[in-house]
Length: 290
Image (cartoon, rainbow, N blue to C red; front, side, top):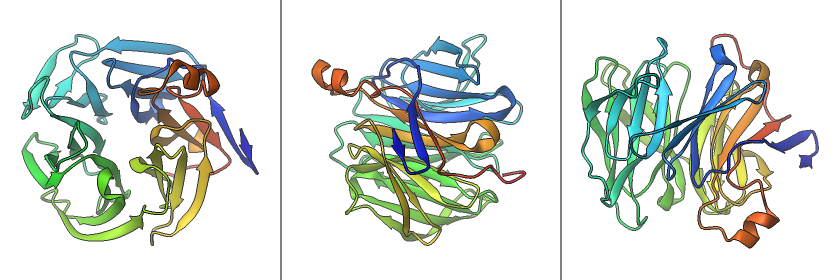
């Protein structure tokens, strides 16, 4: 799928019911992502090799610290998790299996804080919250009264954050107190009312632009630092979920997608749903140290 110089390529990856949370690991030249509903973590390296791991419960988001250790937001709580031994060390576990609230989007900030937001699985009430775990393992609630947490992203210095309650159809920008991890000075970044779908996962590129996947809208949208829409890329899927910068020299946008709630006929008509997408021609190589 080509739009000018932009090329969207569906990758040969497993079909995910709810692919989410892509994380590019530069030292491995690989991307990791989760299929939340199927409780699987996936990895694809630069040669296209696929590896997968079963998870103890639904893995909603995750990150790797500089030492390679994994911190994960499972459906019921946040934990340190070891892929080799499957050991789970819970840091905080506020929710119950089978309950209405689960964790959702999460990101590791450049200052070492792991943020993960929760959601109402019915997408109807403001039952969720945004949680934060300090580098030392201290836990606090940053925001509450959230229906569906999404769009977490951070500036390279960790002093600016982006976050959305998807059902409010807006992405907000916050200043971050890097000593306490608190979010302050909420301001509207992107009014999503005129964009199809709802804002899902986001990432920042080396020019400071925010890329946001719009679930149900079949597109990713690039917005400038002042919240202006710079680009909208249509995709061969209806349910993109999240994106990250990766690939050779950070020149690709990698997008997770979902096949949930789709009929067999609709999946046959659009077989890229549920697979990873790679978009080239839309971003430049990462700046050193970004």
